[in-house]
Length: 333
Picture 1 (cartoon, one colour):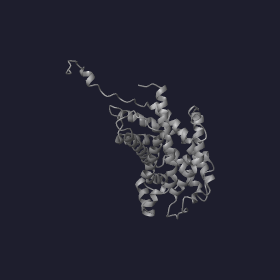
Picture 2: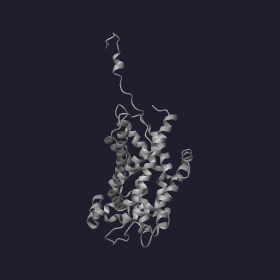
Picture 3: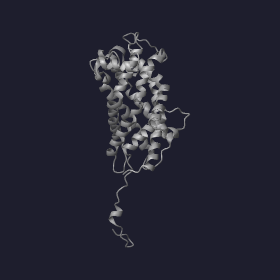
Picture 4: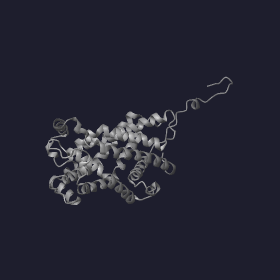
């Protein structure tokens, strides 16, 4: 192709393809996710660098410390969700379920600590694996594809990690809220569940858990990707301020709470000690609606909202920063 001065410009140079943005290796996603969950769990007075340099055992210990601090909100949420109007209800507000927490929380707390270290691997690893295939030629991931990738990551997370531990946790909390608790400790409780119901007893409410966890991550990654694409505009290399990421993350967490708390309520009922009353997920939803009304699908929203917004904000901030750090020391194609 000739210019007015007679200089020829190579056609290949004139039609140079856009440079594809660097993809995130799933291994980096797993490491960054582990660091993010550790930092979110760590006491705020401990420097982040200390946790990022810790081993797996120290990371799990840090997460467990935070679970011990935040677990009361989870305990209150589940007691509210398990409280049926037809029985009649025992609690009039979020203040009442906290009565008797130390015993009730002790058993459910054990399963929560066990599951603490396993969320990051399927969630971030699977999401990045799927999104690397879903990105366009410039490395951009649109909101719709992000929703689908988040859905896939959440579904894998539900099957591999969440469902068995959530089932055990809900049963323990439900049992300790009864008049005559039958589980004397964590090991005894697990043995009794397996003895009475087999391994299948640890996978109660699988369908609802998959729907709940899948929608959880679908909503969060969809909101985060939408905000990120809006913020970056036409400049994909623009740096995102951590405070901006935190605001986006908190919004994503709130959206997931309001978007799928009905599924969370159904999941909790399907995993409780009275799950035998429900023939299926749809039957459980029908009975809640028929006996308690639409408002029952949002039981436990307030205690869940505060914990989730903070956790999601911190996790996304640390995740983004650690990925940047790993990109500098771990060169991948």
